[in-house]
Length: 322
Ligand code: NAP
Ligand code: G4F
Image 1 (tube, protein in one colour):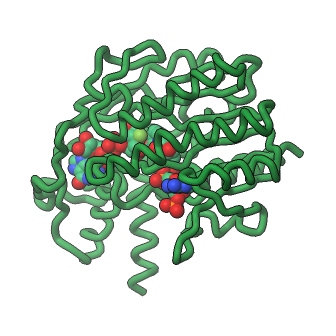
Image 2: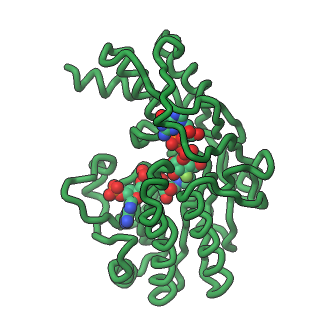
Image 3: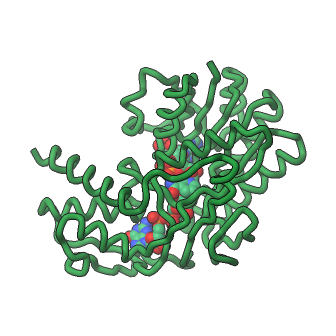
């Protein structure tokens, strides 16, 4: 039975990846940071099937301890300060966790178990002020936030450890992916959750920022399969993962509201507090390398994702009201 360690297992992607690896017969070890309250909401359905161990990307010795104890075949580094606006308020913390945390983990692997295969959760935010459309593995980076800058560092340190020490270390350049488990602060969940609250009469407005930026949104459950596929290859290479289709935040609003028979123009209020100091205007993936090498394709598109998220929030909120 292969052993995999997932950092960030309590997050959206961590929960889907853990379920995916359990179904493949892996022993799954989830690294979680200490907190004063339980953060296991997304993994409560599999808690008896996984092992939880404490560790923090800030703390080198905790990472050494995790690798030493389990000597895993695969490590998936999904942990990060992952919310872009927070990275302007907490740029040093974002650099410590999202950038330097990756070096700490790679050092632990290099020193203790260099046979471990390593996946780094890189981001389309690295393309930022895009140099070409669509974005592929060869598109130059131009990050627009401290988060994007930290992810560029994390990407290159992953490449550098591969080239310097011959580690099997890969960087997955993933475009936006959501799900009913997405954090409430990210725009697609904020909109779908807001639509459900409005439909159920719990509120009568939704305050958003820039409606004109465009993203390539897919379903998180599809994307964790691509992470695993990257680590099953003969050679370590980096891959862009996305749907190849882009939509504006406004289009997302139109679709989510119309799914429950409402018009977004009656409810959405633009609020300057949600504008960013520097925006990423358009992201759209060229996933052709992943389609060819990994035989990977997204199963759920934009419409299916938005409808699934609205329906799930309607169901959950209706139960809470009861
Ligand atoms: P998420 O839901 O925000 O989860 C982040 C995870 O990181 C949580 O489990 C969190 O733990 C953990 N974490 C934060 N700081 C930590 C620290 N110092 N030490 C250990 N763990 C820490 O993010 P996600 O959407 O699942 O994304 C997973 C990864 O993919 C992230 O690296 C993100 O930047 C990247 N990414 C995401 C997308 C996307 O669209 N979802 C696209 C490209 C790349 P707590 O539960 O304790 O907070
Ligand atoms: O949902 P967002 O906060 O996602 P963003 O900034 O694209 O980052 C997400 O995707 C990245 C991959 O590209 C990940 F690496 C990262 O960890 C995260 O998962 O914002 C999307 C767009 C932005 O242009 C933003 O300005 O939506 C716009 N937006 C408009 N109103 C809003 C809002 N974003 C948020 N969060 N909240 C709003 O009210």
